[in-house]
Image (cartoon, rainbow, N blue to C red; front, side):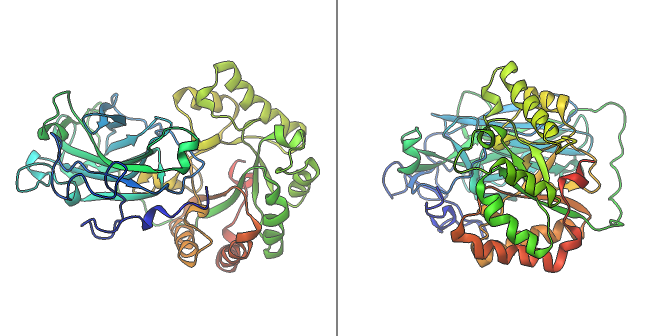
Length: 449
């Protein structure tokens, strides 16, 4: 999929400064409705055909967040088709709004969100309809993602337990017009969808009154954290156990005095699949100071498996690592970042530390603390999709690394294959990290003690 055109270069007409969106119509290049106009009964509906975007291998599920009450869930729809959900919940200090598209061939490409203490605080156009391009929160998600969660401080909105917050959530969603594996390489559609409150699709249904749940008693929001006493850390992890981890990535890191992590799938390694490392190469990484991390036996999507099959994937990969002497196997990387409450509970039965989301699935981006205080919620950044093969992508990656280290946080840089074609750019990125932050690069051995 790496040869697909960049999603960010598709369209540049949208009036929202600083955010690039791809928009439009069905199998033509003409908008069904010009920007700012409405179609049907929901505001600002638009649809357009687009080229196939670059896709991540991840199929991240909505995150597990401890809140005061069950979430209020709205269908994410254009009034005709439903691609997913928008859920709203809160804890003592924050409101959480999660967009999620569980359907196999649908992704979120853009999100626009407004939250206010009054209905009048939601930006509207001249007709009184919600005006998403004027919403204060928004982002383009490149590559498109399955889930993104916004965290909004209740104090910023000006509401507390028992009071009402008003919100409106729009998404630009994308899907192949032929929803199949073959269709992924064909034409795609981008269209506007809303979190809609009921079955009568009128403009007011995209503006919702949400009663802030009480967490029990009076809770004073915690003060801002003090400046970190120590710098943060990063890890460099190569998922799946591909051969290029040893042949291409390892020599670069070795020569720079860096160590990494290999999150491996034992089955292809044991069976000698051509694109994967050999057992002796995994051993060589371990001997060189790398960590070997559990990533299931076969890299199956855990959400598609029976309980017994899921447990076997998790249990047996841990046992393989420990049998090889690479333990203790306390860390786990979720295949495809696809998991829910059932999978989380099973992973926690066998492991203490888990990476199962990327920082850009949250707004603001969510980094782990250092030292780690929520070991089941470690997040990553993917330089492959920055992309590190460009100077701009390497600069973006270094900005994420700098932010984590300067603010006493922890970030995992995740890679898959490191092909020969991008090896010079990969070496340049690793050289930049080693030059400035070598002392802050650790392995999962140090993280998951």
